Amino acid sequence: MLRAEARRGLTASPKHLPPKWFYDERGSALFDEITRLPEYYLTRREREILFTAADEIAVATRASSLVELGSGTSEKTRLLLDALLRHGTLRAFMPFDVCLPALEQAGAALVDEYPGVSVHAVVGDFHQHVSLLPRMSGRRLVAFLGSTIGNFDAAERAAFFRALRRALGRGDALLLGADLVKDKARLDAAYNDAAGVTAAFNKNVLRVLRRDLDADFDEDEFDHVAAFDVERELVDIRLRARTAHVVRVGALGLSIAFRAGEEMQTEISTKFTREGLTRELAAAGFSPARFWTDRHGDFSLSLWWA
Image 1 (cartoon, one colour):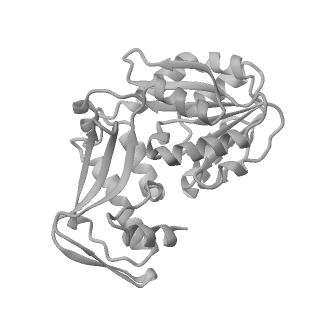
Image 2 (cartoon, helix red, strand yellow):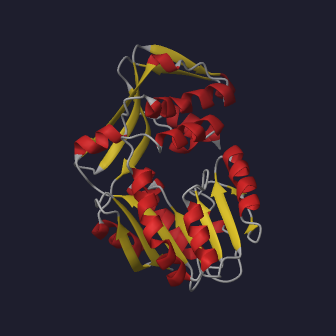
């Protein structure tokens, strides 16, 4: 999969790489560090909502199994797990992520912390495998947190929501985390932290290609570039070549020329409105149940019935 996507993205015009390849073991650790940065409000705001709404979510869904897409360390998910256990419905938890090391570490910790819960960790790409989510007994709650949905473009979101809706049955629910549109200065700061951790995270995709595809990318040849596009309502994240140079990718037999100043897109982070989310999810066949924001109105959690 990496070979095909790297070949397609590096030979495209303009060049691009999928953000999921940030998340090897080092990338997952860097993102965990990002969530603790003062500029990066998203994780704190989502945790605030979960802290106050988890019991309401548990009562509304009565879920016997919790599926988390893009689970990473599953840190915030513990608030949901605890609430479902308090209300006596939870039997199983399925963390689903593309990064095997992070998934193994989180899964082992959860087995120890929740001895009465059956934990089934699954490695997968939710662009391709969400329709294959296994059936589990009772009601399922699928949690897609952290505004990862913002990394999808409009067509990818529509396809993802349709596939997920087909995978869910009557009584199942989706809990969606989504960042909201706000001031450009705040968004630009969130993705250009003073400590440079986001820049290191962005460049980690080059390290992955260097290691896994025998590429000779030099991280020092690229600058991290991120800015909120007001018209498109998304943060556009790129790597900009400092000089004209050629990168060789041994495993693909490619030589890729970069012009000085040429940008390669590595990620987008779409920001949403309540009305826009409702329109997109309704088009996929979901019905709205609840909508929450933090006290600042920065971030949203929303619950949807399949």
